[in-house]
Length: 195
Image (cartoon, rainbow, N blue to C red; front, side):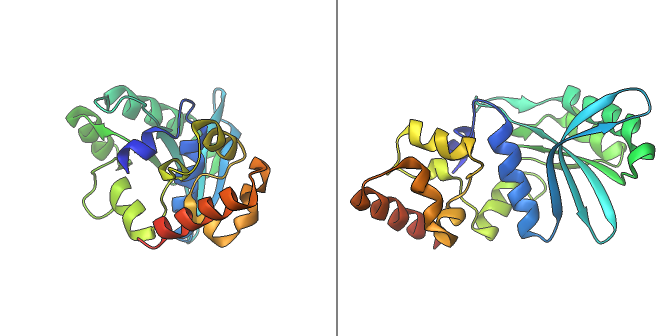
Protein backbone atom coordinates (compact mmCIF):
# COMPACT_ATOMS: atom_id res chain seq x y z
CA UNK A 1 0.00 0.00 0.00
CA UNK A 2 2.83 2.42 0.81
CA UNK A 3 4.28 1.87 -2.67
CA UNK A 4 0.87 2.56 -4.23
CA UNK A 5 0.67 5.85 -2.29
CA UNK A 6 4.17 6.83 -3.49
CA UNK A 7 3.06 6.15 -7.07
CA UNK A 8 0.45 8.92 -6.77
CA UNK A 9 3.25 11.26 -7.98
CA UNK A 10 5.29 12.68 -9.49
CA UNK A 11 3.31 15.85 -8.72
CA UNK A 12 1.61 16.24 -5.36
CA UNK A 13 -1.83 16.99 -6.85
CA UNK A 14 -3.16 13.39 -6.87
CA UNK A 15 -2.05 13.03 -3.23
CA UNK A 16 -3.98 16.20 -2.35
CA UNK A 17 -7.05 14.77 -4.11
CA UNK A 18 -6.59 11.47 -2.26
CA UNK A 19 -6.31 13.17 1.15
CA UNK A 20 -9.40 15.27 0.36
CA UNK A 21 -11.29 12.03 -0.33
CA UNK A 22 -10.20 10.66 3.06
CA UNK A 23 -11.60 13.78 4.71
CA UNK A 24 -14.86 13.54 2.74
CA UNK A 25 -15.39 9.98 3.98
CA UNK A 26 -15.04 11.34 7.52
CA UNK A 27 -17.77 13.92 6.96
CA UNK A 28 -15.70 16.98 6.04
CA UNK A 29 -16.58 19.41 3.27
CA UNK A 30 -13.42 19.97 1.25
CA UNK A 31 -12.01 22.38 -1.31
CA UNK A 32 -8.78 21.50 -3.09
CA UNK A 33 -6.14 23.96 -4.29
CA UNK A 34 -7.91 27.14 -3.22
CA UNK A 35 -6.28 30.57 -3.44
CA UNK A 36 -6.77 32.59 -0.25
CA UNK A 37 -5.64 36.14 0.47
CA UNK A 38 -3.71 36.54 3.67
CA UNK A 39 -2.65 39.52 5.74
CA UNK A 40 0.51 39.84 3.65
CA UNK A 41 0.21 37.70 0.50
CA UNK A 42 -2.03 35.19 -1.30
CA UNK A 43 -1.49 31.46 -0.85
CA UNK A 44 -2.66 28.36 -2.69
CA UNK A 45 -3.95 26.06 0.02
CA UNK A 46 -3.84 22.33 -0.70
CA UNK A 47 -7.10 21.57 1.13
CA UNK A 48 -9.63 23.56 3.11
CA UNK A 49 -11.62 21.13 5.27
CA UNK A 50 -14.74 22.07 7.23
CA UNK A 51 -16.74 20.13 9.78
CA UNK A 52 -18.94 21.05 12.75
CA UNK A 53 -18.39 24.76 12.20
CA UNK A 54 -14.59 24.42 12.27
CA UNK A 55 -12.40 25.33 9.29
CA UNK A 56 -8.97 23.79 8.76
CA UNK A 57 -6.08 24.64 6.46
CA UNK A 58 -4.44 21.39 5.31
CA UNK A 59 -0.94 21.36 3.86
CA UNK A 60 -0.04 18.11 2.05
CA UNK A 61 3.59 17.06 1.72
CA UNK A 62 4.13 14.30 -0.83
CA UNK A 63 7.44 12.45 -1.24
CA UNK A 64 8.28 9.89 -3.96
CA UNK A 65 11.31 8.46 -2.15
CA UNK A 66 10.44 5.96 0.54
CA UNK A 67 13.29 6.90 2.89
CA UNK A 68 12.38 10.59 2.97
CA UNK A 69 10.91 12.17 6.10
CA UNK A 70 9.08 15.48 6.27
CA UNK A 71 11.29 17.70 8.38
CA UNK A 72 10.77 20.74 10.59
CA UNK A 73 10.75 23.05 7.55
CA UNK A 74 7.36 21.61 6.56
CA UNK A 75 5.94 22.42 10.01
CA UNK A 76 7.47 25.91 10.02
CA UNK A 77 6.20 26.65 6.51
CA UNK A 78 2.70 25.42 7.31
CA UNK A 79 2.52 27.48 10.52
CA UNK A 80 3.76 30.65 8.75
CA UNK A 81 1.11 30.29 6.04
CA UNK A 82 -1.58 29.64 8.64
CA UNK A 83 -0.57 32.74 10.62
CA UNK A 84 -0.85 34.89 7.49
CA UNK A 85 -4.27 33.45 6.56
CA UNK A 86 -6.10 32.60 9.79
CA UNK A 87 -7.72 35.92 10.73
CA UNK A 88 -8.78 36.99 7.27
CA UNK A 89 -10.20 33.55 6.40
CA UNK A 90 -11.58 32.38 9.78
CA UNK A 91 -9.28 29.36 9.95
CA UNK A 92 -9.26 27.39 13.20
CA UNK A 93 -6.22 25.15 12.84
CA UNK A 94 -3.39 24.14 10.51
CA UNK A 95 -2.89 20.50 9.62
CA UNK A 96 0.09 18.88 7.95
CA UNK A 97 -0.51 15.58 6.13
CA UNK A 98 2.34 13.59 4.60
CA UNK A 99 2.72 10.19 2.97
CA UNK A 100 6.00 9.57 4.80
CA UNK A 101 7.17 9.76 8.38
CA UNK A 102 8.05 13.06 10.05
CA UNK A 103 11.17 13.98 11.98
CA UNK A 104 10.99 14.45 15.74
CA UNK A 105 11.59 18.19 15.33
CA UNK A 106 8.75 18.49 12.80
CA UNK A 107 6.41 16.72 15.20
CA UNK A 108 7.59 18.62 18.30
CA UNK A 109 7.17 22.01 16.61
CA UNK A 110 3.74 21.15 15.22
CA UNK A 111 2.46 19.91 18.57
CA UNK A 112 3.92 22.94 20.37
CA UNK A 113 2.09 25.23 17.91
CA UNK A 114 -1.24 23.33 18.16
CA UNK A 115 -0.98 21.95 14.63
CA UNK A 116 -2.29 18.52 13.74
CA UNK A 117 0.03 16.11 11.94
CA UNK A 118 -1.03 13.03 10.03
CA UNK A 119 1.89 11.01 8.68
CA UNK A 120 2.25 7.47 7.42
CA UNK A 121 2.43 6.11 10.97
CA UNK A 122 1.30 8.98 13.24
CA UNK A 123 -0.91 9.38 15.24
CA UNK A 124 -1.52 5.79 16.16
CA UNK A 125 -5.26 5.58 15.43
CA UNK A 126 -5.39 8.38 12.86
CA UNK A 127 -2.28 7.80 10.75
CA UNK A 128 -2.52 7.85 6.97
CA UNK A 129 -2.05 4.10 6.87
CA UNK A 130 -4.74 3.54 9.52
CA UNK A 131 -7.22 5.82 7.74
CA UNK A 132 -6.66 4.11 4.38
CA UNK A 133 -7.17 0.69 5.92
CA UNK A 134 -10.21 1.54 8.06
CA UNK A 135 -11.94 3.60 5.35
CA UNK A 136 -11.04 1.08 2.61
CA UNK A 137 -9.78 3.89 0.40
CA UNK A 138 -7.02 2.27 -1.66
CA UNK A 139 -5.29 4.33 -4.36
CA UNK A 140 -5.88 3.38 -8.00
CA UNK A 141 -2.12 2.93 -8.30
CA UNK A 142 -2.64 -0.38 -6.45
CA UNK A 143 -4.34 -1.78 -9.57
CA UNK A 144 -2.09 -4.22 -11.44
CA UNK A 145 -4.47 -4.48 -14.42
CA UNK A 146 -3.66 -0.92 -15.56
CA UNK A 147 -0.45 0.42 -17.07
CA UNK A 148 1.38 3.38 -15.51
CA UNK A 149 0.12 5.56 -18.36
CA UNK A 150 -3.48 4.49 -17.78
CA UNK A 151 -3.17 5.16 -14.05
CA UNK A 152 -1.74 8.59 -14.82
CA UNK A 153 -4.74 9.42 -17.04
CA UNK A 154 -7.10 8.52 -14.19
CA UNK A 155 -5.07 10.57 -11.70
CA UNK A 156 -5.08 13.57 -14.02
CA UNK A 157 -8.88 13.27 -14.09
CA UNK A 158 -9.06 13.22 -10.26
CA UNK A 159 -9.91 9.51 -10.08
CA UNK A 160 -7.55 8.61 -7.26
CA UNK A 161 -9.01 5.62 -5.42
CA UNK A 162 -10.44 2.21 -6.30
CA UNK A 163 -13.70 2.97 -4.49
CA UNK A 164 -14.50 5.50 -7.25
CA UNK A 165 -14.39 2.64 -9.78
CA UNK A 166 -16.42 0.32 -7.53
CA UNK A 167 -19.12 2.96 -7.01
CA UNK A 168 -19.23 4.10 -10.65
CA UNK A 169 -17.46 1.76 -13.11
CA UNK A 170 -18.11 4.16 -16.00
CA UNK A 171 -15.36 6.48 -14.67
CA UNK A 172 -12.78 4.31 -16.43
CA UNK A 173 -14.47 4.81 -19.81
CA UNK A 174 -11.99 7.67 -20.39
CA UNK A 175 -9.35 4.98 -20.92
CA UNK A 176 -11.19 3.52 -23.94
CA UNK A 177 -10.39 -0.02 -22.87
CA UNK A 178 -11.77 -3.09 -24.64
CA UNK A 179 -14.78 -4.65 -22.88
CA UNK A 180 -12.81 -7.61 -21.49
CA UNK A 181 -10.06 -5.35 -20.12
CA UNK A 182 -12.67 -3.03 -18.56
CA UNK A 183 -14.28 -5.98 -16.80
CA UNK A 184 -10.85 -7.14 -15.58
CA UNK A 185 -10.07 -3.69 -14.10
CA UNK A 186 -13.49 -3.43 -12.45
CA UNK A 187 -13.12 -6.92 -11.01
CA UNK A 188 -9.71 -6.10 -9.53
CA UNK A 189 -11.00 -2.79 -8.11
CA UNK A 190 -13.89 -4.62 -6.44
CA UNK A 191 -11.49 -7.15 -4.99
CA UNK A 192 -9.29 -4.36 -3.56
CA UNK A 193 -12.35 -2.51 -2.22
CA UNK A 194 -13.37 -5.65 -0.31
CA UNK A 195 -10.43 -5.23 2.10
